Length: 296
Ligand code: URA
Image (cartoon, rainbow, N blue to C red; front, side):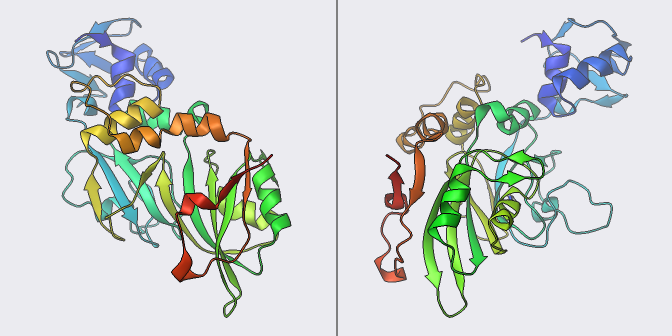
């Protein structure tokens, strides 16, 4: 199917739509060996060869999608100037040029999506879609109700106020003086969770992302990865407000429908306030979600 060239380039993950337009105008893009500088030209990537700077456009590869359970000690970039291990080292068999959807700090573990679908990456990271991310943080000290309320309402960081968050205490560890706190945010600023806790006077000693857009790590152990299913990819397209055209749209699984990220966003934007700060011993833990209470 024919598509505008800038859309194809953005879809391939090489650049954003706007940057792709500049690449075209700058004469860096060719169709079947002929440089095109006009915006609006359409091409069918299945029938013609599109090159950017003389190299085959990545979008002409098959699109692949992975979920990784990132351990600490890996940077979330494709290449590291300082020679540190990157998350790509954990997926050595993947031949396509995949890249992470957002970042987890070197010292943060947990769920990281990697893919070569630039369109989906851009949309999932766009603030407009308020994609929810859930983190489990172990923090120093007796995390108080007041601190929880402050986080839930939004705290002032050096790059501005944070949006309201869902916060609940999962466990307290009197021996070590640590508290395990779950926090759900939809923004994606640099080291945001650590800075939020810092702003209320707590240090994060361990941080793990347990969910991204309603997908969780179930069955994927630390350091391991798996391919996303077609249903999960279709679901992410829906979360990101994109049309899923890669295959006949698969039937969405009920569990995903129930966890629909956008419905979640609407319901929860400011209504969810804080959970209980009651200590729940390990052996009595109930459904994690039961801990949330609607603020009235
Ligand atoms: N917030 C952080 O502080 N670190 C991460 O890696 C992700 C969110």
